[in-house]
Length: 240
Length: 233
Image (cartoon, rainbow over all chains, first blue to last red):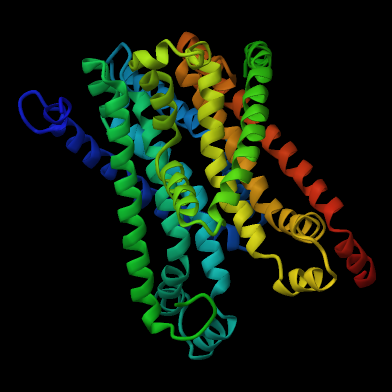
């Protein structure tokens, strides 16, 4: 078999590159998810607020970032961000084109998209909290913050878990598009290795298998987490 | 704001609209047929058939579309058997490769959506049909298919919107669709925001049109609910 040394970790092998690239994909995904959770939480608050302006803003955000191709959003952040950086650098007397770091651009772009989906998940989870519990907390005289911390957020995490699992997979797959900025994540790694060896098929299959490993492992992790949190919620539909 | 530039950008992007639409329509048509086959395999009693469908769905839903597209466009050409086969003129063409990989991918998602629709058909209705002496085919045509299709429509419209967005990946294998043209204009002019706004507007309108179209189909397929809506109001 000729292809094992090529995929291995020896001097002729591309194993190191692929392993580093897989870690990079994971890093982009996790960072984008974290950023998406922060923006998503703010969007959810805006969606649930009484202000028409805030609700409208959140709706427009959701429509645009869920309806426009991910690739265009990555171009917007990468090229647009780079122009912005160049302009700001110009103010400090540095001339010429400066690029936004590919990792940062990728995380911001994928995070912005992820936020639009996470906001929907969080909103659904908030709606699933029984109104009586929030009323009970208010009746106890809990402040808004305490209510959020003790009653709402712990339950949102539980109700949002299945949806977050889906968003994780979506974000993981979106992270492959960051390869267009030149960041060496799994997709780009497979491209580089395939281009250097002309064994495109082998490396794209390997890359695909590594993505499948990541998606199935994350699926397992979310199923495990769901089983764990649902221990404290013994009753109800859909809780196994 | 430079309206002249916006108008000329919009014109260039709209000239690429037919390519995006062709990709979309061809991919969802082939994907629909493939998905029907996959659901049939997935629900078959033969364990080999259903395992194959499960594996297909796992692979195509679990990996990014971009790597599937590159695998077909760059990967298949590596084999001389394929380069000398009758399919090579098709597999050498970026547009055909894009349609092929979009169809294969959407088939996996659509199959799961249709399976969900089939599972939503109430057992009592199937039993009632059987009790009336319907053959398997009549049962499927009169009872199962209409209910399943109606149940699957909302999820299917989401998949269609995702497919509109997915057609943009074709630009990465040199198909000049809207995203491809937009990327070209951006790299020539560096006016990212204006080009983005124009392209985003076209994609949003396309998605909106698809959602309205499926909503109308849903309305046509639910006459019983139109009746209860009237009664309720």
